Length: 379
Image 1 (cartoon, rainbow, N blue to C red):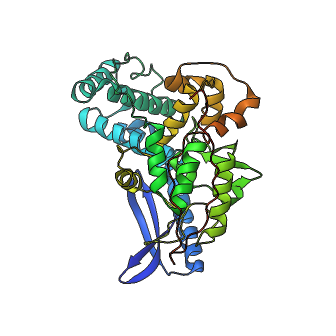
Image 2: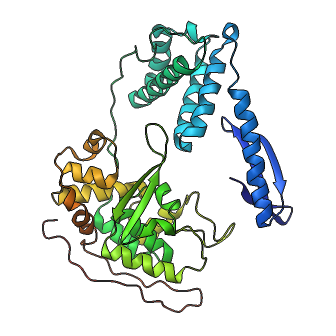
Image 3: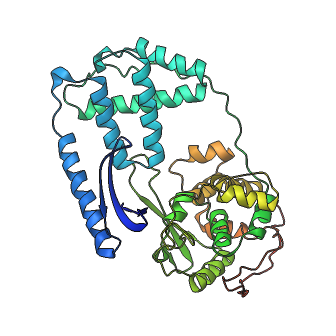
C-alpha cells in the first residue's frame, strides 16, 4: 500500500514495490485522494510485471541455490504475513552465507546437518529447529513447483530435531493489566479491553473495521494460517466491551472505517501499522513490569484456564486451528460450544482497578460506561 510521506515540506503519496524485502521500484505522487488511487494502481501494475517474470521457467541446467531461495521467498512474501517472511528470509540468508554449494542437488543431509549444528552451537536448539522447519518447507515447495528441482529425500527433514530449552513466556498478573488499564485513556483503554476480552492479536485489532463490529459480536481476521489465507472468526463481545465500543464509536475524533486509528502525526486518522512504544510507556506509567500485546492474549488464556474453562473452549476463543497449539499454553481438554459467550464474559468479571475517565482535547470529561462486576468466585 502507498504511504503518506513528508517530502521536502510537502505531504505526498509514495508508491513502493519490494522483492525479498529490498525496494526495487518507487514513485512519488501528489497528496490528493486521486493520487493515492494512482499510486495503488501503479504498485499493482509493477507487481504484476514482476510476478510474470518470476513465473517464467527457470532453465534446469542453471538452477542455483540462490534461484531456489529467491523464488520461494517471493512466493512467501505474497502469501504470508511480514513476520513469517522476515523469519524465512533471514534463515535463507544465513544458510547461503554459511554453505558453499551452488546447486540444490548438492545439498545433502550431511550439508544440512553441518549448517543446523552450527546454528545449535552458536544460537540455540530452538533457533536450529526453526531454521530446519523453514528450509525444509522451502525444499518441499521447490520440489513441487520448480521444474527440474531434485526429487530426492528432503535433506533438512532427514536431520533430527535438536534439544530445546525454552524460557517460559512472561504472563502478567491480572492485577498488572488492571493497573495499565486504569491509567490508559480514550481509545487506548478500548484497545486494551478488546485485547483482553477477545484474546486478540495486535494485527487483528489494527485491521478491525467498524463493519466487523455488529450485533454484539466482533469479527477478527488473521493471516496466521498454514496457507497464509485470511481467516475470519466471529466472537461475542462482553457487555463491558460492547459499551466501550459504543462509547468510542460516538466519541472518536476521526470518522474512519477502522476502529483504531492514529490520533497524532504523522498520519492522524490512518490505521495503525505498529505501536512500538505504547505498551512500554503505559506499563512504565502504571508502575508494572513491561509486557506486550501478545502477553495479554496469553493472560486471557491463562485466566480462563485458572477458572476452570476446558481446553477446547479456550481453543475456540483463541481461534487456534489445532488443539495442540492451545495445549502448549494450557494442557487440558474438553469443549461445550454453548459456553463460549459465558466464557468470554468471565474476562469482564475480574477485579477492576480504579479507572480514569477519558478526556477530550478540550479537557471536558466524557462519561465512560462502567459497571462494577465482581471477580469470578472461583478465580
